[in-house]
Length: 214
Image (cartoon, rainbow, N blue to C red; front, side, top):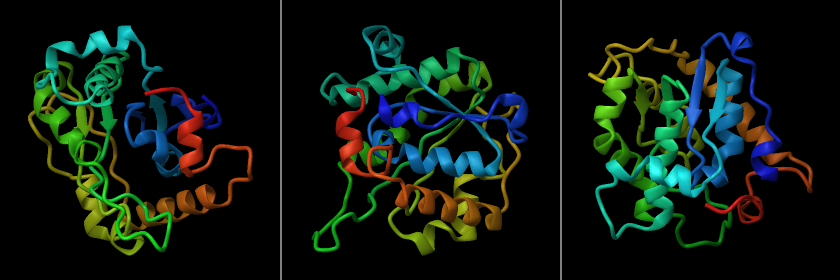
C-alpha cells in the first residue's frame, strides 16, 4: 500500500501523451517506482489497476489458459481486464527476463520464467479483448538490467513501435516519445529510485514485501 500510494499520477488533462495503464501484478510490485517515474516524465498519466481481490480474479477467468500456473500469474488476467473495463486504451506491461542486479556478488539475476514472460501469455490470450475494446497492449522484451542497452534507440523503438497491430487499428495510438526523451526519462527514473529516503517507497525488495499481497 505504501509503495503505490506514494506516487501521485498526473491528471489526465495535464498529461499530453494520454493515459497509460499498468497492472498491479508480479514484478510491477518491485519496479513500479521506475515505470511510474519513466512514464510521468514522458508526459503520461499512469493508471494503476485496483488491489487484488476475488472480484479482480474473477474478471480474468475466461482468458486463463492454464490451471497449473501460479495464482499471482492467474490474477494478472483480472488486472488487465480491470484496466480495460476502466476505459484505458494503452496498457504497458513489459517482459523482463533479467531483473536489476541488486547484489554485485550474486551469480545471476534471472527472473522466474513466469514473471519474465507472462505479459506474452496475456498478449496472446487476451487478444480478442484488446481488439474488441480498441486497446493497445505493449509487452516488449526489454534489457531492463542493462542501463546502456535499455536506454538505446533500438530499445525505445521496441518499447514504442510505430507499426499498428490489429488490436491497435481502432484505438487512438499514444504519441511516441523519441529515443533521446526516453533515455532522459529513464535516467531520471533511475535517479529518483536510487535516492529515495529510508521510510518512503523505493526500488528495494523491502518495499515489495511491505506492500499489499499479490
